[in-house]
Picture 1 (cartoon, rainbow, N blue to C red):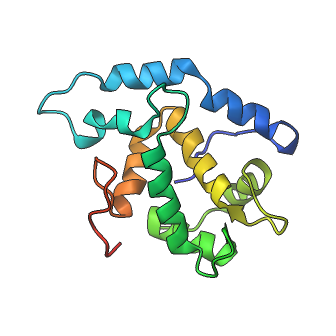
Picture 2: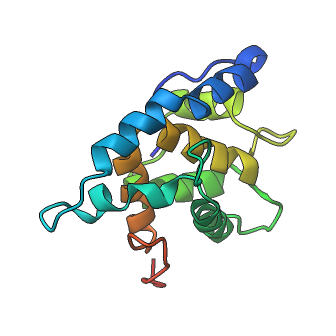
Picture 3: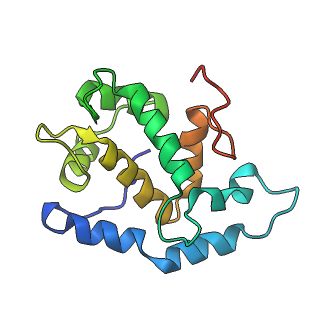
Length: 160
């Protein structure tokens, strides 16, 4: 799902993204809330650390690989960017509905896009990095599971 917090405009996109991604408070709070593991916790609560790099400064390589695989499913023309139809297919499968015009404009203004305004792989990963590093791990897990990934970031349902 699209990360709904305003993430800046063209002039401060890099600054805002850097602020969100590098926020140590967000990672510490997220990690602290998921460190205790017992059998009563859901897979989401017990597997949050796999989403983050070892030093907590970014998302993990394993998450980037999963996101790259998901992105490639929707990049039907193979141009390394999601055009409006491809992005809409992603949104509908992931969220059950298309992105709003406001969300599409937010993507174009704040995430990496090509010259035509199509979301690049870097922008797609950036979207999830912002969402995850800001502490919305449950939403990230929901999307990953919708696309067939388990709590170990293994693709277990190839039909999705």
